[in-house]
Structure formats: C-alpha cells, structure tokens
Length: 120
Image (tube, rainbow, N blue to C red; front, top):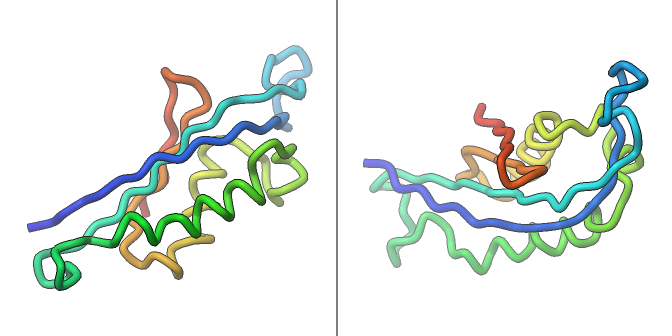
C-alpha cells in the first residue's frame, strides 16, 4: 500500500520564454501567480513511526527557499534553462529530492486551469 501526501505553495514571479515566435504572448515578459504542489509518498514499511509519510512542518524549508529564490523574481535570472512550467517542475524536483527522498512529483500551475507535472 502506498500513502501519498501533498502540500501546496504559492508565489508570484515574471518570466519570458525563448524559442517562441516574436508575436507569441509568452515571448514577452509577463507574470504569473504560481502554485506549486509537492507530492511525497511512502509504503507501509517506510512510514514514520507516528504514521506520517513526512511531517508537513518539515516542508517549511521548501517554503523559505521558494520565498527567497522565486517569489517576486524574474525566473530567467534564477534558472539556467527556459523557465517553462515543465522545466521548473523538473528543476524543483532535482533541487529538493535529496532533502526529501520521499518526493515523487512536483506540479506547477501558472493559471487556475493549467498544470505541468514532473514525475520521474
């Protein structure tokens, strides 16, 4: 049996995407109110003794990092690659999986109707 937990985080930032036609709306600098969801999972044998996959309070380290590194920033200055939602999800996963080995998925929303997901 697998147990999964998720926690949602929010930040605002700007970006522009390269490689698009000059008249594409995302080629211009613009901003989003991003939503990030971290998903962590564990099987029965891997649950903490109290019955948690991970204590939600421990995810505050991610929020502190996100507030410092991403919130109200221009993401092109933060990331080495094109800051698409897909690339951001992979980048966040790779940055945090060592800290949270239970991390199984990072989802990012740029709008209430769109999501990108990285699940290795």
